[in-house]
Image 1 (cartoon, rainbow, N blue to C red):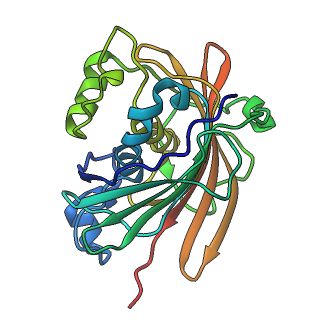
Image 2 (tube, rainbow, N blue to C red):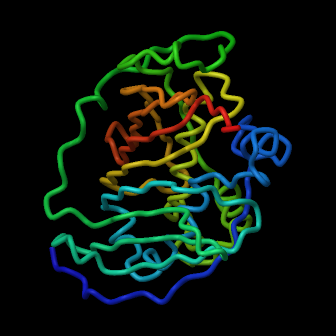
Length: 275
């Protein structure tokens, strides 16, 4: 693969936009403030999708359709915060299109740290992708740490975006790039792809308050508007730090029986504020 020139990017400043992701009270002012936050927390998927706009503008479907990324959310972004994305060539990597990204708010507090590249030789799909979902019908239970059974797949989550739904997301997040608006089947915005990972967990359990803390993504292909997507989700690790309870999920997005996106997603599913 031809390596892109290691050119720096101009800092990209944007304003966060909160879109309530289902029942998660972290994305409401009242729910977040009840646990000590100053306002409603903007979903990590949304901020991620906004901060990578310069990468998409420069590299387009070349990057969208095949990349590895590792991102960590180090502090929350709140509704209508101004955030600046700093994208630099990653001097520690010899992979194509390797960049490091840091998103900071107006107080210069670091919100997200990310590294990304296009793998020279993409690794094979994780064997977890072949585990069949355990489908069932009925009411969801509360998503507790004890109920997150390791290596037991959730029920399958199926979704398909219409063009109007996709454009609505782009409008709400101030996404104006033509790559997401032209033609009958543009690529689904990566922020919206990541957001569906939360919906897959909420398809299995009631999740009244939880916080996305980081993800590793491996993209093998594009998900386009109109594609029917099967999203499989499996808890693979869980641990406790103090009174907080954490879970890591493996998630795979399947289109036409082919895995196109893999995500290893970490979240705090029980958050207890410090005194």
